Image (cartoon, rainbow, N blue to C red):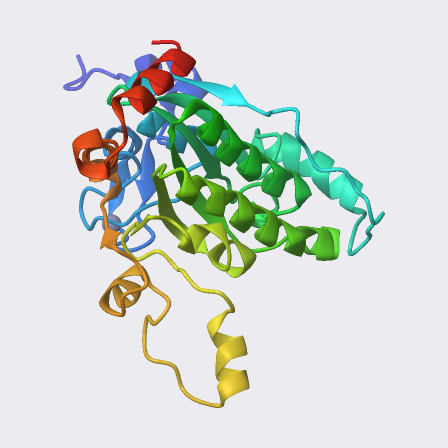
Length: 302
Ligand SMILES: [Zn+2]
């Protein structure tokens, strides 16, 4: 009799594919502190590292779902998408670039618009998506933002915009730049109607988006450590021939210098926006008449 029984046969009985420990999509490494995080934990903390607070980038649809009551909203103007008015070709034709972007990003444009409620207040919101041609603003993005403002005006509702953008879309040339003026004009009308516009800057918010609606909020909120600026640091250094301070285009630097009103952790953002809306839409504070309130209720279908 042998002292040890052989167990190798039992091991071999396990099919090879089941012997591999499946770790794919279970762990995510934090870009900032390099901690290995359970994907499930990261999902639960709204894509914010539970160890160091690093804010991972998220998509437009996730943003809107995090804002609205119960994550529910009606998507608006999804049919407004870019065409190729200049028949532009860089390393590849713009038409082809658009097709690929729609396929890879899962969104029809670099912004998703929605109507819903935040703590029972009717709200129109738009969220930009970096995965669609770098969150760039072309004619379709400009039109969607303008329509959101017009919806807010018509239904007497608040506006919330989440920016995430590399700037104007170069493939549409001057047509992209014109969106900046178009949106600014619509926002002036919103201001006259005394309707609140809350602008949330996420990583990164740059170029023509910073130079237009992102910085025109009644309240401008930034996510922690987000890159926010107009031109990139290298361009500025070369232009002014000076060394720039460290982190000068980050949320914290901008808050210190009065460019943004608050830095809010993503996990507290919905509560923060609710507080702002409760305040800004309170007729006793804003001076709006009872009639206005009734009108807003009637049009929002309450
Ligand atoms: Zn971390």
